Amino acid sequence: MYLKRYQRGFLRKEKRARGEVWVYRFRQTRHSDGKRVERNKVVGPVGTIGKSEGAAWKEVERLHMQQLANEPEQATAPTFRELAVSYSSHEVPRLAFTTQYLVRHNLDDYLIPKWGKHIAVDIEPLQIERWLKELNQNGLANPTTAKIRGVMLQVYKHAQRVGLISRGDEANPVKFARASSKSAYKATLITPAQAFAILMDLPEPERTLALLSAATGLRISESLGLQWSDVDFVAQKITVKRTWLQGRVGEPKTSASAAPVPMHPLLAEGMLRWRVETPYAGESDWVFASFKLRGKQPREGNMIGADYLRPAAVRAGVLAKGDKRRFGWHNFRHSLASFLVASGTDTKTVQELLRHTKVQTTLDLYSQSMPAERMVAQGNMLTAIFGHNTPAEN
Image (cartoon, rainbow, N blue to C red; front, top):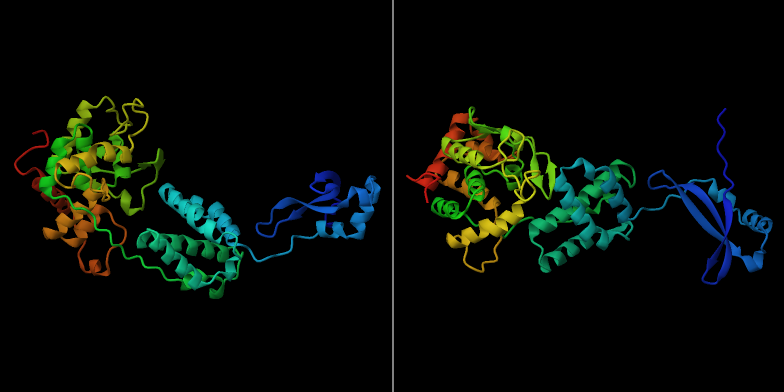
């Protein structure tokens, strides 16, 4: 027969602001997560109860404190902070590393400071809407506040799934809080002539990195995550197996991101030239290894962008001197897509070359492109960049 465990707890004298008191300590099951945690209750002043522990125990019995110690913590409506902590502990670790960073940033810097102490189910949709608008007025762009709203929505959904709050719509105010995701940002596009000027202005390996970005539209984290074993010169393809961002190796953003990328002969020529030149040319070496760290890890994309790419873009006329607009490696990706669409490339081919997971509904009307078509599309961009020149020419 199973007998329920009974705890007596223990007593301790402690000094408080108003003098020495008897404190009753015990362990209790916390309602929010079911864990056993230590609790304490002040029994009373030592001067009133007496210095003997026996007298203190009599006061504990008179106040029925042992009954409290042997019951689960009474359920109370959880705060948003409790919901957020549960979500951060159980769901965020499942996300890609880059996504984890952004989610925790939104939780720690925006959501918890604003809503942490509020009872979660008492927050109203219009309160959330007004707050998001205030963030817009204070300089945050619509897509940013929409992402903050999205994280808040996931916090509530998680809490409903695990039973921290009711599963009814009335317990999730974010469902009814609107936030615009329309962006006023327009990416600065790089023309083929400007791309050529940037390439010729850069030293190695920055030139090869820029060539790779311009030809394939690879995200900078994907380019920096490449090892030479991922570059297949015979099959004319590059395979994205990992990413490098913020000093950590991560997984590709989506399953579509891991699709092979075609490597046109013009691109292969530039990649092969760099492999001959770099001291880190082994199969397991990083393609864009850090010389400072003796090849042990790749270089950092934001630093290369600030120190090399942006100054080259200014000299190429892409940006005016002192221009504060956002500009980086991702502009090559935008420019590639824009060029291909403008040149009449099949939209499905563009989607596959850039390895997007989702496309507009109209893309379903297009036929599946063959790898040869993607190679031609990439070649068109490279031919437009170089014209009759070759990557080695200055």
